[in-house]
Amino acid sequence: MVAFEQCGRRYGDVAAVGSVDCAIATGSFVALVGASGSGKSTLLKMVNALVEPSAGRVLVGGEDVSARAPPQLRRRIGYVFQGIGLFPHMNVAENIAIGPRLHGEHLSAARVAELLQLVELETEMAGRMPDELSGGQRQRVGVARALANSPQLLLMDEPFGALDPITRDALGERVRALHHDLGLTTIMVTHDMAEALLLADRVLVMDAGAIVADETPAALLAGKGGKIAQSLVAVPREQAAKLAQIEKAMRA
Image 1 (tube, rainbow, N blue to C red):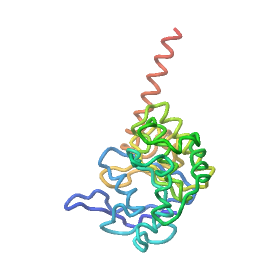
Image 2: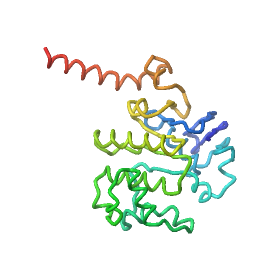
Image 3: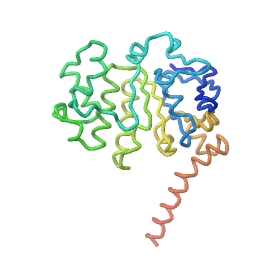
Image 4: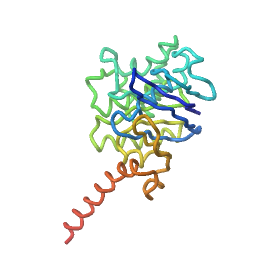
């Protein structure tokens, strides 16, 4: 579905992304993980031409993304923004329908209701304004908007970062279910290794603009992937160990 061929991006003397070669299979759920500034969001944005490569190319479905005008390219790709990005002057239905509208298409009330149901929101919310919604509800609307064009490829840039842990976990599970049910290929940027391990089939770890590990969650938990990957895995592992110690002490 997606291929990066010697793909890089420079900003002056700074290489945000080095020469990345990587292929992502159709139907897979891939997490891009790394510290802030590692290049993961820049790499993701190259897929839908929000960022142009300084070198190499990105292919979607075997076609160079530069071969199409960005609006045409993005009709095939759903994108969930970091920070949600709903238009405050538009109601929920209008926000969901904005993608098709930009392409001259009308999204019916029935289709809006269907999309709301997919993200487990009441259809009555279609007429509400964004400031009437909770953070979790707004992000669900953002996911519905990304699905409005029935994409095959879903890109998510830190989609759950601003949510509380309970809402974050519930929405992550819903996105994983939608990935399966709709037959999507999903690429998710996250700084949360636990989230990556729980949701993804494959985890790409980035550092200084390069992919330094490419493993399954099971392989990472088994100790593979190298020093940088294991330093990220250590965080949820240590948290789990501390919780286990607290639980043991309570039982004593």
